[in-house]
Image 1 (cartoon, rainbow, N blue to C red):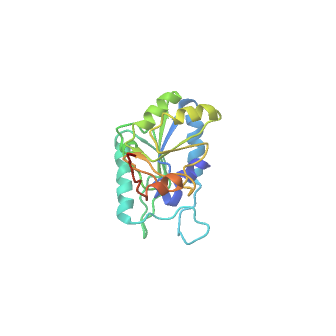
Image 2: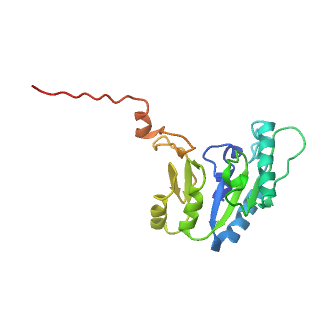
Image 3: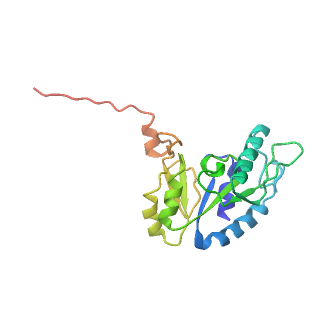
Length: 209
């Protein structure tokens, strides 16, 4: 499913990989069940094996830091649904992991998880979910999934994010400006707006006699 693909992009080590999943209460249980099945089914192993779907993290210390973030989230009241163990043996592997019941103030909500760990939060109305999303200090990309695309376009205006995708995962496309807000950066690259970041605009003011 799209959620597992979005979370495990480049083994979860991507700035635009989905990290927080804010789910409407009425579909939360159904979503969590499908998401859990998709994450559990991923093949973890040697990245050079064509059958592998999830390889290791870049370094063991990054893997250990990620596991510490998971542990602190669980200690604060989060619930482990899938994964969560730190495997023995060579390599910086970490299993596909889902944390549910994640709330603001917990590590998995407040910090960036740079690995295959998803934080799931159950919210109320669409407006409340937008408020939850905007509590994050980050604002690179966001994705809205709904059958009501007109409503999604309205909600997108209220999200503090440099990029918003509706019914699609966040992607980088050379035709579109790429960049975030808040702690996710300043300015844009790619697209016409990105080209303008590399030039200087000259002001020439002339008073004619």
